[in-house]
Length: 241
Image (cartoon, rainbow, N blue to C red):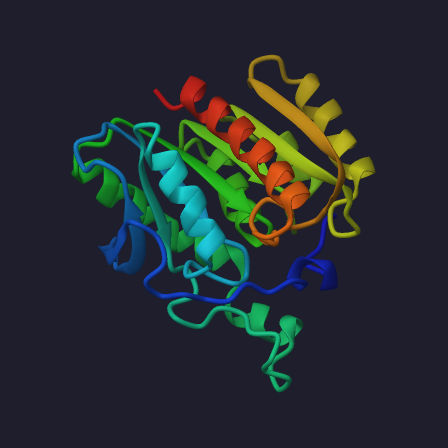
């Protein structure tokens, strides 16, 4: 089973509460960063990694997806208590006991209902690292129309075998958390389920976290992240309808 290991939480982003062109509001009982036209009938739920919904690159991705016509939300599944590597008294194994992905899954349900109550017809979800486990649980129960997993953590082969919604899995070549060998097993399991549309890709020369925890001053890192963003968006445009 994939794990939430040290590589998950390298290159911690600087949290910027007011980053992005959207705003924060209450949605389904949680604070959430929302961006895009409220008139849209199609929504994307972004489930963050352990660093939470204030990460500027994540909000930049949300704004990019919103520019394609989606209403995008990033719920604060950690309720203001995202993981902080600087807090030596609360290492990752301790933090995750308070914020396991099963809580994120339960918190996501009222968020989805709130989106539906606003007239949203179809909802896709993209999970990043830790958030991928939340999204795969939604896909197993058909609570969303489409799923994307970006460098997932905690997602097992058994999880993938139970997925019922269309799903894309994007893995990193250099990843001790969910190594390419496990991603390949995901691909084989999905290939045996022709009734579930799927796409699996392993990106060369990138490490776990490359899609959101990249250095904005590193042109190659930005290019690699943007490739993943493009693939994620193309998948969502096809399947969230």
